[in-house]
Length: 63
Image 1 (cartoon, rainbow, N blue to C red):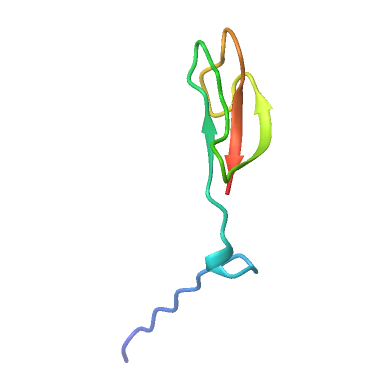
Image 2 (cartoon, rainbow, N blue to C red):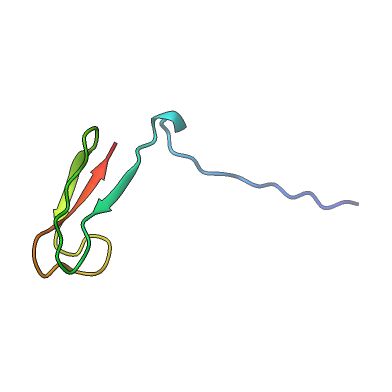
């Protein structure tokens, strides 16, 4: 008897074409994060995605 393997993939409810593209902008230690045209700022803080800023902020931009 052959073994059968079933794989399930969990996907978000919304359509994949509507998935957001997001990233942190700003580079430690002297951060000057800003979102380019077409992106919206969703968050702002001094550590963002890891290394913390000595000056300025990192911003989380989504499109």
